[in-house]
Image (spheres, rainbow, N blue to C red):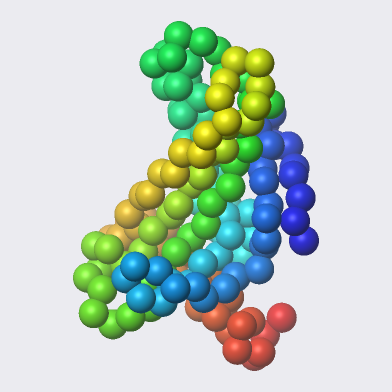
Amino acid sequence: MAGRYCIDGIVKKQEHIDSEIVDSPYGHKMVVPIFNSAVPAYYQDFALKAAGMFMAAYSAMCGRPVEAEDIYLDGHLGAYLDRKIPLDKKYRLFITVIMGQGSNVESEDYVMEIKVLPTDAHFGEFRQCLVEELGKMLGGQR
């Protein structure tokens, strides 16, 4: 189900919430949308905090305020599925901040790509999310 939802004044944009496998420059990639209910709260909270920091940095750099209603937030957890991908490139959190056509901003998308490493404190949750979503794709779970 697509839609827009407001949390902490920031609008979450959901084009889709179902996990999927897509082609990428590095081979096949599993994508779990950031606001899918299977995504651990840590990563959803991280995306919201990153959007808040982005707003502050954008305002400081451009010399004009950005309000929460001027942006939309989207993103996904990603895992490259091919075996030859090095671990430091295999897992990612992608956060997309979409600037709307507000009175103070130009319309533009900004993508943040954050490494997720097996040594990270929340990696177990990240991996479990991917495993559960893959199980749903294969028809073993709901």
